[in-house]
Length: 555
Image (cartoon, rainbow, N blue to C red; front, top):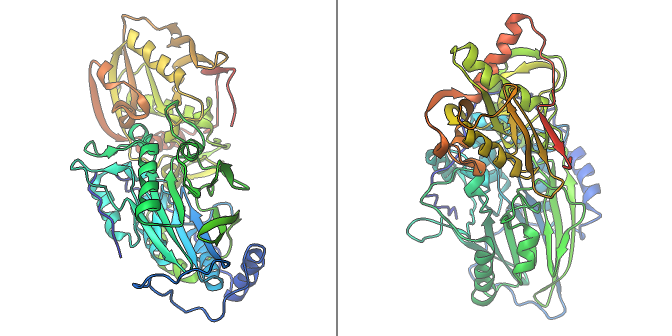
């Protein structure tokens, strides 16, 4: 039954872009041969004559397990899809994922399919249609449950409500409540299988309050407190045998108060498996903390987590797991997506300029250091006000987490710009006393490398962050070639997310005057690239030492 009550404000933007078409699909025989070879290492022999359509959950009690019987459940899971409708680098794609899931279901009678959040915000194609093709594909793949990641809270209430109407599987929110104290949607799910019962709860990171834009009326409950309550309910009231925590909290700590999946496992007994997302980590084997296994499946649908639970006497006695790379698209999903791809390609595959080299993204480099891509975006933000509006700007800065992909050498399309900058961020221009500018950059220095708030600044700024003491210290800050004068008024440009307090920035309260320019950051970048093209200038990746890191790390 479709059960999701979404009573909040959050969503992603509607962006216009295009992406290349799928490669020619493999034949069914080729897919079966290839995928079944990879599957045999983990799977038991197929059961005789499975039904064409899975039978609904029986209303009568599940069969009583025999004391010596060993029952099996295949767990499939994804996370951090981020609009990856099509394959990237030959991996993933929704049609490819569906093909593998179908093979697993055809060779196993008991399968559980979960998603650990962040379906939204990524490829330009998905953004253009507000993740509608993604969610339709998820419905066709018959996901059993999902949760809300922080990127489900990026935008408007209308967008999220529309997505809620599209979803045909339960969305579990165990630690988010509305103002009247009701859970945002189902707080847990119980699934009955032959020989055992599984209980699933869902936890969204409280980092969402800092790195996204959830409706202010929503109440986020501490991850550990909520998990303890859910485990107690599932174990003692629902009498489940296996407890799975479906979480979007991540295994990499982003801030001192960030509760990670290892933290959760250590603090909450009674969880058999945590299926996690948020950190985009690629595990080769499960991480085990106490008696809890933690698994996650990287990012963008490049991998599918695949595990086999063995249950005897209503207890988990064995758990085998691996990440599976996906190849070979499903024809039905491919056909469904074709109209979306056609619309995008027809209107948005417009070349706006040429890059003479690759503006690298790497392993999320804009969250760690000065980058050519971050430089170009910050410089273009300041440039637009100076050239297009003939206005004074002292410096510009953005959060590195706003940048989501590389800019390859060669032709630049609007699709690529909107893939790099998928958020519907508008530019703000404001003024601030020099003393507050110093505090701003002291805050920037305190942001841990790897966090989305790590700044990328325009060429007007020069500064050093020294991490040798363990905490970032600001050193040698200059703007316009001179030390910052505490009494002078400086003019800055940033995006609405940071201006509104995103990533822990305190800008609005320190601002003397400000204006919302009503200019999308992606539009300004497009305009700057076209200007460079029209002037006949080369667009070359560059770093110039505006940010120096001492004692830091590289991803």
